[in-house]
Length: 309
Ligand code: SF4
Image (cartoon, rainbow, N blue to C red; front, side, top):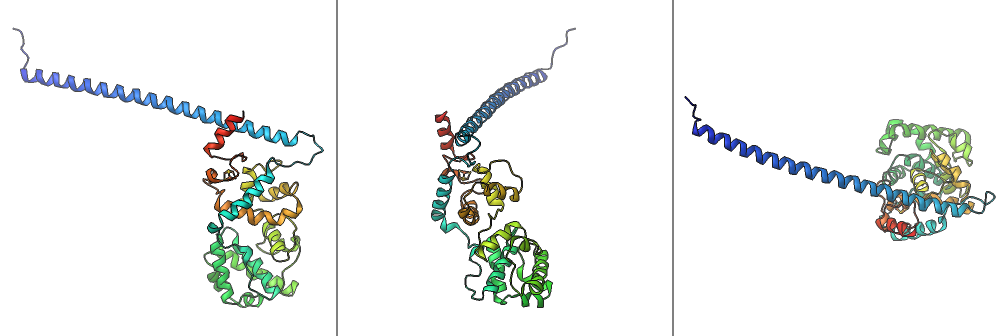
């Protein structure tokens, strides 16, 4: 006897087959779409690579033009004067974005020794710290009429509380106390006036020493290189060779920047780095240097670079 299929089961089988068919169609459409998307991504990555190669070629050409007269000619980066003038012009436009700078510390103090001390201490506080925090900490020290004697009298924990929350506030409080002891013992409550003697103070590095010589002693001894100057020098290709540390960058910059500009570099470039050429997401599309900056990410720079090739 032939077996007859249950009509309900037959109905179920055909419904299952239909469902499976739909799933297969959806899956195949999904994989097709994925494949298309992958191809698009590969295409756009390839375009990006080509654009970057093209831009690099333009930069190489610019560098060659500068060096074409031979080795005797002093190396200097392409377009640096335009870069510099644009940076100064952008400082005027971005003035409203600038925080009050450490270079204004001590403006209201008439005692020269105290003024110089405040400049040195503000620079010690400023490392790894935002300007606004440094200024606030200095304002609190000013309320206590901060002097060498004050630093010697106050307990280190009390001093740390006053300067908190600048970066490394505990360590800096100790540095300030130790430094003031040296200023009392060796410099008659004044600060020393050479790079070497300044760098010998606890917590004082080359950048602080060069800026102290400039702001406190009005003596142009070298370029104060911090993270902003280091970063922007690389972006603008202002370095004749690659550098890893701010000290190496200082030496590389001083090899070609005219000496009378050394004491103008730090505060102008730092302000530019805080308001326009930011560490992450620099504002290239509104930067006056976008057509002559090797690191520009502005879309119209890429177009111009392509046209020139
Ligand atoms: S174009 Fe961009 S990277 Fe170049 S200097 Fe201007 S903001 Fe900085």
